[in-house]
Image (cartoon, rainbow, N blue to C red):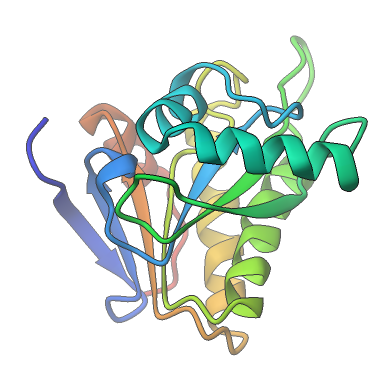
Length: 187
């Protein structure tokens, strides 16, 4: 894959929308679209564990043992090191799974972004990169996720966060374009 390509910026350059590989982002933290077990899976989660190496899994197992024996609840976020990745840390969050015939859970999706940004702020991270949480195997419609994601990020960043840059990293250009067509950033 080519290096990341910035397609658009918002909020005076604080938010970058780009196409690239999230595991290659040189930021304080990347966000992992994890499953509740925190033990790796498919998609972004599997790639992060594979590229980052066994240390991430070890730390996730310790979090499960000591803090979340039943699994990480949807919308919550936890922090581990990033292993061999160029990022310093990984924020793991569990997005909502869309149930067929029901509206997607916008409150839980917003919680993923809000809690991840709160963890970044708590740890004084300046740069953070997100994948498109829940829009893959979890079935959240991409066009419906975009307004939730953009409104949540803008609300947090304009509310006094120490985070100076949020990268929204899409692996496929088509996904980035759907986001751009449906986002609701004010500037």
